[in-house]
Amino acid sequence: MFDKDSLALFADAKRLTDAQIIKRWVTHLARSVPELGDDELVDVVSGWGVCRLPARSYWLKAGQSQTQMGVLVAGLGKLEYQDEQGGVVNVQFIQEGECVIEHRAFFDGEPCKYSMQTIEPSVILTIDQTHYHDCCQRYPFFYRHINEHLMQVLTQNADRIDNLLISDAQARYVKFIQENPTLAARLSVSDLSSYLRMSRQMLTHIRKKLGHRKGD
Image (cartoon, rainbow, N blue to C red; front, side, top):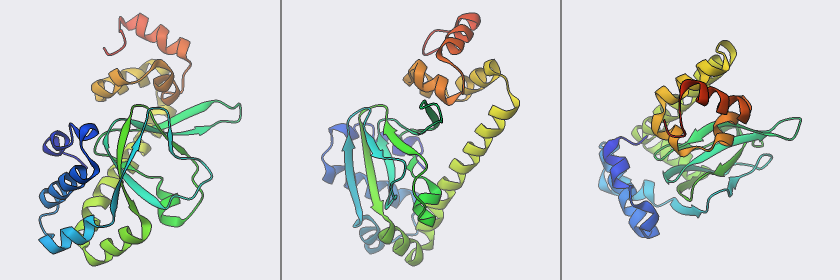
């Protein structure tokens, strides 16, 4: 959802007041959806709020209803679930400028299958379902802007599933760090190994074999 200019716009979001963050959100939407007039922008943004969370805290837990959608403007988060053995499995990392959403829970009203936990202290812009759907009905360009990003996320998740099914552990690791070098440097061994569906020991062995250090 965020290009380089928008990422720069929110680079200091953790130090901004809620009002300042909302003001920059207006700037972002005005730039990203130029079809929206001034009054329409005011209407769209009127339903957004700001949520601040420390690291390793939950914005949403599995089994709950998702009545809000979020956009992460600062920090890092993940979607996770608990397997039959009680272990935590990471299925998606959420970086700055990406939506915080479980699609079926938000759009179809199903209980959440995943929990959303922050990895770093995070700032999330939030919008409730009613205001979101009202804005999408009134302003098709806003709907198109959000929907394009949501489709990108679904495509990325499908690619990840394909990668898990057809690639061995080392290939999965190499592909991930090649495509996400900055993100990889921000993740712990536990978070990354869970996402790649391998043990911590296996990930450490692969890194050692390839001569990689954390952040390489």
